[in-house]
Image 1 (cartoon, helix red, strand yellow):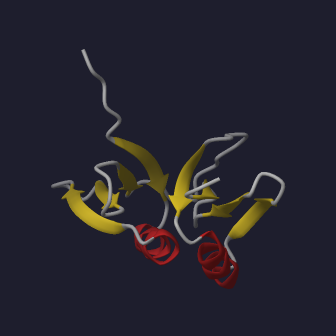
Image 2 (spheres, rainbow, N blue to C red; image 1 turned 120 degrees about the vertical axis):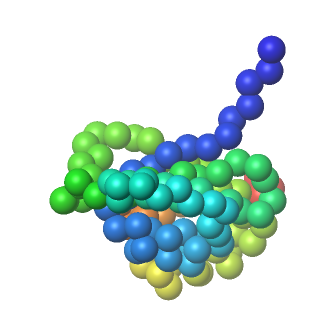
Amino acid sequence: MKFRMVHNNLNVFDLEKSLKFYADALDLHEARRINADDGSFIIVYLEDGSSSYQLELTWMREMTRPYDLGDNEFHLAFKVDDYEGAHKRHAEMGCICYENPAMGIYFIADPDGYWLEVLPEKR
């Protein structure tokens, strides 16, 4: 028996804003989309083009306010081959929410407040 990780889901309040963020910040692009027949939800799967792993963004029509993430310490991590270039891009976007120079990592926050760790390919 062999298990393989396939995707993570994040519920998002403003789908278009989130799609733009993930494209601009992390070069993720839409791989496929599911639209509920009744319009109650939209699911968009994003890919990085180099792995089979996907990020699933789910928009729910009945959600009328941003999600409350509470004390959730959940985050996704992304390795990047140009750490300095990525840091410059994210600083210009104003989305860096925490830096740990001693560990050589930093975090960015998406429009819903989810944290995304950025670390260099080689540490």
